[in-house]
Image (cartoon, rainbow, N blue to C red; front, side, top):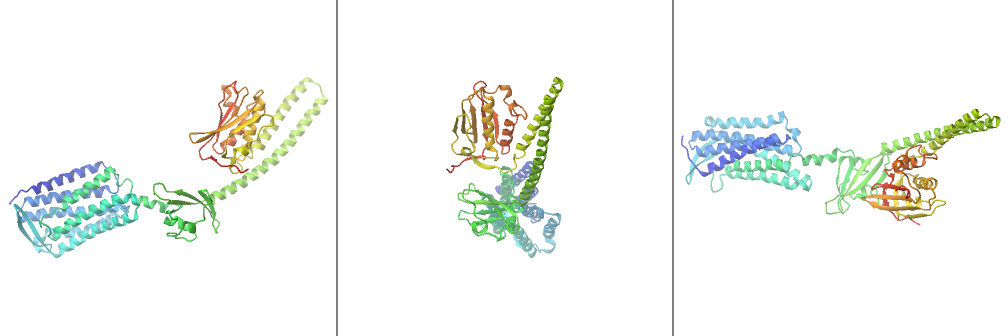
Amino acid sequence: MILQYSPFILIYLGSCLIGLYLLHYTRRLPDTPGLLPLQGICTGASIWALAYALELVIITPGGNIVTTAGEYLGIFILVPSLLFFVLSYTGRARYITRRNVLVIALPLILFYLAMITNPLHSLYYTSITPYSLGDLVLFVYEYGPIFWIAFLYLMALVGFSLSLLLAAWIDYPSFYRPQIGLLILAIILPILTSGVYVAKLGPAPGLQITPVIFLLVAGILVFASAKYKLFTILPRTQCSIPDILPDGILIADETGAIIYQNRASVAYLASGDAIGKGISDAIPPFPPGEETQEHAMPDGRILEMRRYLLAGTGADDQCIIIHDITNRRMAEVNLREANRKLSLLSSVTRHDIVNQIAVAQSAIELVRFETDDPTILRYLAATETAVLRIHSEIEFTRIYQDLGSQEPQWQPLLSVISPPCCLPLTLSCGEYTVHADPMLPKVFENLFDNAIRHGNEVTGITISCEEVAGELQIMVADDGIGIPEDLKERIFDHGFGGNTGLGLFLIREILAITGISIIEDGVSGEGARFLITVPEGRYRVQPVSR
């Protein structure tokens, strides 16, 4: 056995060690569809680099056949692993089945058997000729027909991988194009170096640098998988998400032309395919100043359309989300009808009960005229108190049954708040409009009534508005005796108070329908102050027409 030494040998041995390190490092990466193919690339490139280093060391022709067999083992592991890696990256891991792997691997096994038995038939290599490049002895191979079939098959696998990436580069969002372009470049480089080697071009024919290039590719892929989570968020997966959503999605550029629509949107548009058409030709125009609209289809469906500007595009690109709200609207209609029937039943029942209460009160009064027995009069007083309590509860049901029965509305505060009958009112709320239940005027009426009844000689009421941390705070204050600390929360309980105990309870219930809260935070002895907090999105500044 004849051996030689060259600095090139250290390069390939070093490349092999780097490949083994990369293989070891991949064990730290999360288990994803692309991990096993990535490990295959590292393994194949490492075997190829090691075998070629041994080919440079051993210059005996017989030993050269053995090292070449090692090289092909690495090549036949590396190339299909690269294909499986690209399939995983582009979201096609489902095609990596045992059957498909066997179909791809079977020709490679046959080629490998033909290569290692070449001395018997010379169909893979017709001859192997050594030549000197300075002090370095290299080998030049003459290729047989089986080699060319194997080479074209390997190039077809690599070319198919490259075509998948090129299609992804065109199809995926621009955000992913730099990393896809890097993968394309990483595949083109070894294709070029392999072509140069097979064609015996360049200053050193017979010197194969492709294994080093492939290890560089493996390093890039491992680094990208670890640093940028190449497989944690697959672009192919992200691109397919809109097509599995039930809502329609349209994207229009700054000119108003539709540049994207998902599958669901086809069923929502009269024209079906809308790519290239104007957004105004595909859907009804939005009302001025509105970003949401409803549209009734000829088949009875009701569609809700929401418009969003796409941030970060640098243009007026917009996205339209189309949602079928037919079932929701039908449910709302059915619910309103059920509420109507319940309200009717409640009204009839309440009317009958009030009539019976009137009969009971008349009977109590008649009994009073018929007797002066203190025991009977005491029992009558207790009975009358109970009857009045029942009447109060029935009256509460009359008010409460209408609560939330109508859609919330945008209501200007200046129109909602009416001055109390016998107290001066100072109002400074600008032109705020609040989205609340139609019973919002009763909130302020009850607050005024509460101040008059319990404020002990209140001389005036002040209402002011202020925006704090994205919320609107409405302060309703008087200059009465205020509310003790231990009662500030209890005053909102049902039944609490000296009158009916319904006013403040109803106030909180009315406001809560649209997420508005109310507390009492005044100083006892200096007057009551009710703080109404309207959340973001439930208020706006809108001039009131006069």
